[in-house]
Image: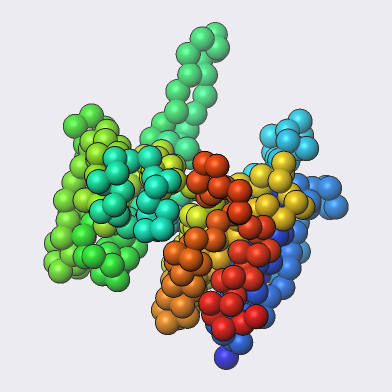
Length: 355
């Protein structure tokens, strides 16, 4: 069986890291064919819109989407509705993606780069943040009063919206450590009280085998800094997830290693590194391809149930880091023997048995 993957490289370093990820996927399986589509600033330059219909149609006709990054200072002055980042929101909407998965872990070989206490870094952690993606305060009613001296943003969630993201969290925990922490602000917010009630009702009725606890968002933020190994899977609202996932990414030591997935009801998802387009290093062969490669591994695992192939990719990444290979973003202070992005890709391919 052949799987069709929509490759959306985007802007800046996106084409470099996306291309590397596609090569690695081909190294572990011959079941994939890739078709490239434009989105972001490059699409705006060529078609006059950040998300052409051709790209939407191509992604909808594919089994999954592998995205690079979009945006850059070149397009800072375009009207808001034409900004490259609108392509991401458009793709999520068209593909029906409402859940974001953001893993954060420490590679043992990079423990020295972790900003946590040495004893906590040495112990390691491996957590997954499951963030609701299409509701909450980011999508609620907003505005200003007639005088313009007061503004409001409305948080709203339905039981259906909470249930579907919570179900994804419970299912994810079943494949990991069997522990879900639901993060809210139920001591203050009515939406959080509905969130907590709904998550507990779902957990008790459908997932009694998964351990469930609750934590206020401020306590969760502190726990990530104090000792993130407490967590397995965190499930939370759009805004809280936005903040916590960025915090978690920083304590790992480098955003150049972190992947993400956006998922909906079907097996089709959109997978992307979190590091952005980094236009200042584009074309210099400096960009670290690992985050994009690990995003591809997530695609194999979550969209296609190819756990063996995903494990092989993740092990290859761990092995090259254990060997001491470093790109510029993850080298230790004073280290001069760092390698180029293409060399990191080649090293990973070699671990997979491809020269």
